[in-house]
Length: 155
Image 1 (cartoon, rainbow, N blue to C red):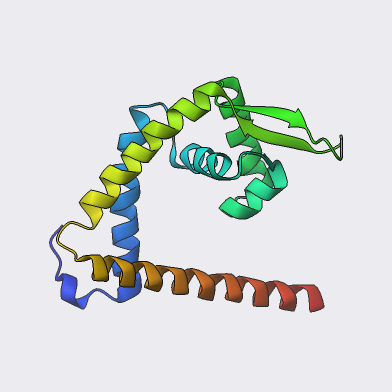
Image 2 (tube, rainbow, N blue to C red):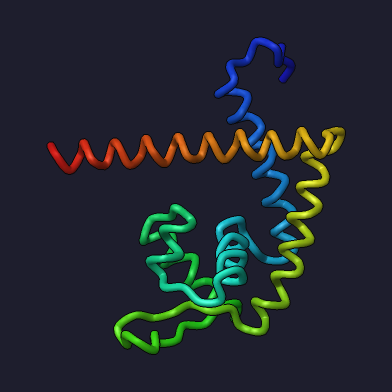
């Protein structure tokens, strides 16, 4: 498919880039029997050490059925375990197992490779500016989502 990239709307260009990026990441993660959602769970639990399923779903912006399915697969594969919360036995805390901890090194390696490929030819300043733009876009989307939620609750 040949098209004039200069005439694609920015939103369309972002979609095209995201599609290509996700296809590349998917192929890299498949080598290690992981998908993108599972890799995100590994990263989150590695950073926080322990989270409830609800906290993890909020952080990753995943629906309850999606996070449940992902967690069950990862638990069966031996990447994560569930333990009762010390202060509230009704809450189950998710933690990485030894296998999950060793796998995070692979996930970080893949992430580093992806970032190196994505930002090839960009200066450090351009990378910082791009990251700032992405954070602003994310904040705008989160604010819009919150505003739509408020309107939904009122109606």
